[in-house]
Length: 527
Image (tube, rainbow, N blue to C red):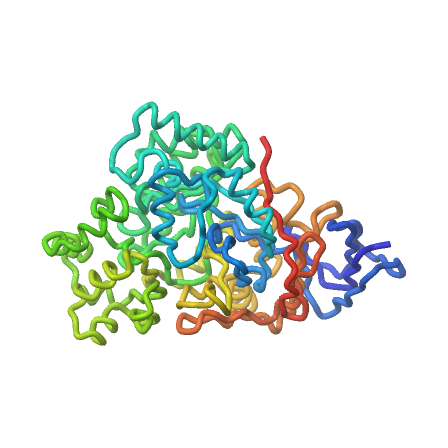
């Protein structure tokens, strides 16, 4: 007796092979039979004619670490077919959190109601396991957490004792089941780390069979050098490399993409396991203070705010941001996505220039007054990438799909603000635009980039494929109906066409609606 039989669906198994019509039998949370299982008894039979059935999508680049702790957690990932999120990217993870790192995170997440009762990765994992999750979670350890917990936000090299402490924290996190280490070399405190520090820590991750995922040091003028640095770290540490959200930002840098491909493909030819991920949009999203030069952020949030309040410092900071360009060139393409204070909510969805006009201020005045008033907690969208380049990136076999976003919702605290629409629509948009409409990729190729390929990269041995003995994480969709609805102006909209989503053998989405069930678990790597 099967628990569930999915009958006669067009099954794309995640391997890249051509899809076929077959039945899927599910027992005790696993795929227990494939093929023609006509007449077999089951507690439930779902007739999947006219549907595509594929493995649950694996979001190789997610940032849900803290939103998962909100009650209820956001549904935006599960509603677009994501059954596993790889969290802890860009050097920022849910744990470890000690010292200045915990203090900084507490201040940045004021309003979420989190009590920050945990410090270690083991405590964080236990906390997640006891909450009930819509999706499975695979955690990485953020290098920024390690550095922030031990050194704080100072721009200097670690002492040997500090290096040993960071290494110890990393080992404890890997012992707790994390899948590797991520870095965010564009952001403090990761921006202050030299290559030798990163190589030494990446070697430890390598000893555990982990990966090194990196938001590289620069995605604009120095992007080629930054990719080369990631390759060097991977090669010297002997570790698989994942370049996060591969891009060239700013029109003058769009032509650098072939040189990046050349570096990566040379490394692949030489035996380095290197790959990348990308979200299907040409706008980036991060905190507004990411525009600040790294020296302006030294010492943590309080020191940053001190500099922002100084009129003399404002001149120096703004000059560094502008760098001989007109302010309009930069700030007309930056959209205010989310603020904390009610009196600033009217600015959400407006560019910095529009906000300045509304408040009868200069661009410089609006920029600094908003950051100061919001204690630097301003999320923004940056429109500065190439659609043509995005298509070229997706054509590469070594590129996967990642949302680069947290799980949000359509209601409650997680239903506020104007986050990047990728939070709600990344995976359906990828299929609609680059497979069904523009035919950049075949469906089987696209599904592999979202399922089997990230599973192999991470080292998940029982997910990512529709295969006997694998966990029953599945997506059932109608291709003619699949589309993202989230927009920059109205992002809090679930997609269409995702009919059913199963996590560990349990329906979490049925007929396009959440069932409210939370069968997700924290997936742990063991050495």
